[in-house]
Amino acid sequence: MPEELDPFKISQQQLDSAAEVMNLDKTAHEILREPMRTISTSIPVKMRDSSTEVFQGFRVQYNDARGPGKGGIRFHPGENLNTVKALSAWMTWKCSLANIPFGGAKGGVICDTKKMNDIELENLSRGYIRALGRFIGPKLDVPAPDVYTNPQIMAWMMDEYSKLAGHNEFGMITGKPLEVWGSEGRFDSTAMGGMYVLREAAKLRKLKIKDAKIAIQGFGNAGKFAFELSKKLGAKVVAISDSSGGVYSENGLDYDKLSKAKEETGELHGYDGKKYEQVSNSELLELDVDVLIPAAIENQITKGNADKIKADIVLELANGPVTPAADQILFEKGVLDLPDFLVNSGGVIVSYFEWVQNTQNYYWTEEEVYSKLDGIITKSFKDVFATQDAYKSQKKKISPRTSAYIVAVDRVAKAMKTRGWY
Ligand code: NAD
Image (tube, rainbow, N blue to C red; front, side):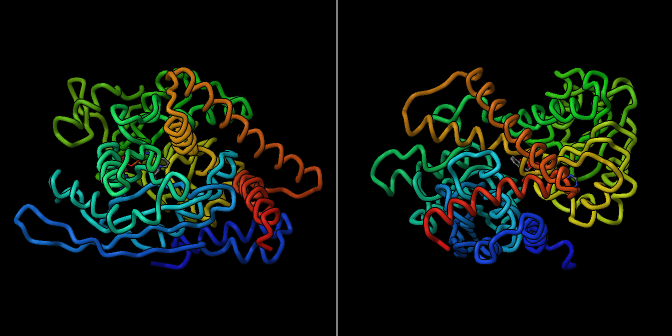
């Protein structure tokens, strides 16, 4: 992988830029450039033909100065330690920016879930906990779903952990189904949080959300709900894609038809007598829209295509979709690029609510969850732009990402300092 696309190097560069602007203490910077703990493990799993396959798994705990680690577990064939390290750093900044009492962590297993049946997936999920359970827990490190993991996998992991502990431990993992004390509002919380951020960004750019044109890359948990919620706001989703490409319609796509087509055929086409126009993933990114929502994977907007982005607002619902070089180009072009760890923090904020509810054994309504989420994420948005304005008044022009980093890093550094770590 070219160094400029290595996610961990990218996360370090982003920290370095913020550290320079904010004049971060040298020792704090050194601590924050590397994870606190990195765990690699081999997971033997019984397969359907009674053979045993050994999978490689990871858990990285980046920093816990402000609270237990928090971060998802990915099941992906292309998983690697560097990506997990970067994601754990981003979780640290995300939890800090949201001002919730968690540090950052992330996990992953190298596997192809498309080739596994439910029994094998269950065996792998339980195996992950047998291998790593002693390093996680409600006061230690609290995982959640991520790419190719889901609420059912969280339920199996909670069950395995509880069996090992000898008692139910619902708060050891979040993103669980409601039957085993997940939270109301969790399933669309990432996209919902993104929509609250979009509402605030639109006010800033004087953009009318109603009738705004939106393109979304990705049709998974994040992208699908972003589509549904954009429609509720009155916006027009003109393009959406999955890993095999996308569809486009100037008059707006029909969510129900596309979801049905995807469910029935596995393909995104959807028709109303005729199929929608096809677009490639790279064409989708360059469409003339008001808002572009990357909601799939990393490194989609790079120095190779940043100049061709026509959207006024880029809402980073995926983790790491814009490289640092592209970030700079977008900033200079005047595009409002809203950083991933602000935009997609709705998922972890509602995960926090789930953990709080599990800890208190007292459960909230969906309305309470959404209204508390709105309060927290809108405050984060305001913190980012207040910091940007404060630097502007000192004649320093900084991007929203650098500003968000400054808010987040400053809180973690202050917690480490107060605890006597440096
Ligand atoms: P998901 O597995 O549900 O969906 C991923 C989507 O991306 C699928 O539609 C897939 O077809 C598409 N995709 C894969 N490779 C692609 C490619 N090369 N080009 C275009 N599309 C491609 O995952 P998700 O939960 O929706 O997560 C998407 C992104 O959002 C990830 O970066 C994830 O880390 C981030 N995120 C998700 C959550 C959450 O709660 N789900 C929370 C925070 C961040």
